[in-house]
Length: 446
Image (cartoon, rainbow, N blue to C red):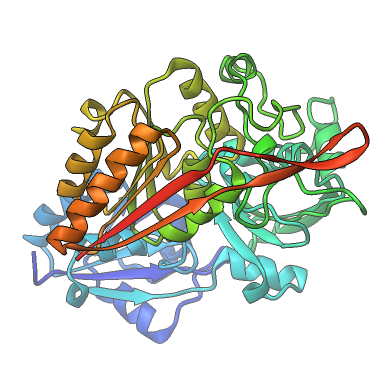
């Protein structure tokens, strides 16, 4: 198996393969050629009768079949669409086989071709794949006047994208649909989000070829505030904290971003000023595995996963009403890919979770001392344990743990007390109403 050569060949965007000399050499050297039916048709003129052609199975099945193929041949070509290493099959091969076995041959991707058809600069355009992913994930990337190029599937067709843009308040959005790029029937059409939404369900409803990419250009009307956050620090009233509203959403009502949410302070959330300090201390990074213990309605977990899509966040909560709000907020902000809601009470609910390298304890339900000891023991060197306390009992338990760590000399401790007073109107006059101070303790393990 280690002697097997694998050529992963990007075919570009055309009904006929346009290959480099190196790619064509790799293709002709392969005893077995694997690809979709459409891809095999694209290279049919370049293949000989002696070369075995196989329709690409599921990757799990392909992994099982390749060892048997390797006993019979020494070179296999796998056909890919466009650039195999840009939202393509190449990444899977890179994770599965030794680098010495792999030979990549990039072609022009549909994303590149779409930008050229529309005269847009690729480096100024964000790319998002919704292929096989929840449609709501688009909510993590919609920004005013930031072009977003999207790889789609049946669930994220142009009409569905239009509905999401309208729900987020981007009513002047332009959506350009690039279909069957490189084929004789290629076409590029542009619509407003309103046009696409209004045409849906009508007798003359717009239809699109499954082979397409969409460029979404979100635009807010002048003077209208964005409903989706553009920077860390989501307003408190941006979170669902009312269990009745959460239950309606989870029962199937659309989680519209324009829906009225509960007033700030109702329900259990970490307030914005404190939350920003927590985000700064946690510094969510690529490949982090973060636990949010006692997540409440989820404000911290939502922001951690929203701003760092390449980390994994596990939000642990057992209170039924808070759990409903947490799940509704997850849906509201589209963070289903990297945020997992764990229904259960810590510390028991922690037993089956992946090992974390960062932990935030936002609610302990009287178990602060136990949670601190258990979580600290689980963290690897360089891991971070952060906990907040409002009640005097929790403050004392955290202070005791702080003294233990200082005595052991096994961490870099940091603590801060945050007291916030918010301005309100009373009888026509401005006054500041203080919130209870919150103590934050951070421990970075040596």
